[in-house]
Every structure is written in C-alpha cells, then in structure tokens.
Image (cartoon, rainbow, N blue to C red):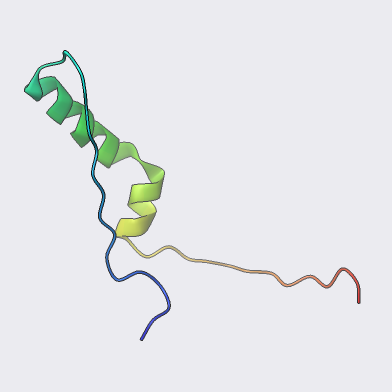
Length: 55
C-alpha cells in the first residue's frame, strides 16, 4: 500500500454578497489556476538530493 494519500477532500465556506454565479466562476477559476491543485491532480516528477553536512 502506498504511503501517500488515496483521496483528498475539502470544503470551502463562503460568506459573500456576490451572486451564486459569481461564486461559481471564482471556484472554477481557482480550480483551473491553482498550482497545488494541479500537482495533486496529475503526477509530478520529484527529484530529491541527499547532502551530508556533518556527522
């Protein structure tokens, strides 16, 4: 079994005078341009370097 997450869920609560349509457009825009969400949705190459700095 992988050590990572199998599912990530979230909830966003909004208190605003904006219309439902405006809030929906904001959510769509944030989902499209959020780099963290993009990384979670698709595989990302990870490169790690081990550097010994002392004993």
